[in-house]
Image 1 (tube, rainbow, N blue to C red):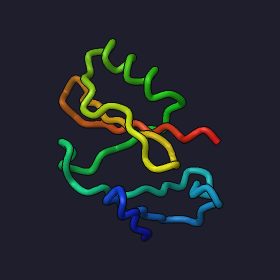
Image 2: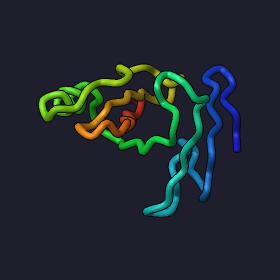
Image 3: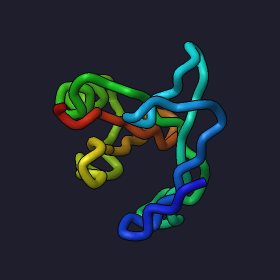
Image 4: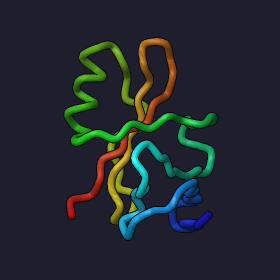
Length: 98
């Protein structure tokens, strides 16, 4: 585990990763744990998307609500959170432009 203190976030790796932190094995998952807060009191499933903006527009169009808008995560990428129509909080992840 690696800590990212400026974000109060702990990276968790479960498999070998490349230089960008991406799992080397297909289907393998790495992740992290943020400090509780900002309405995120439980583990959150996070989905990788090409565009958070496009995804949040679709979420709203389909009845979901934005829980936390797009925000940068260092130079790694961006995250946002939404509540689905049943109140479940789901995360979105967009990689930074390389």
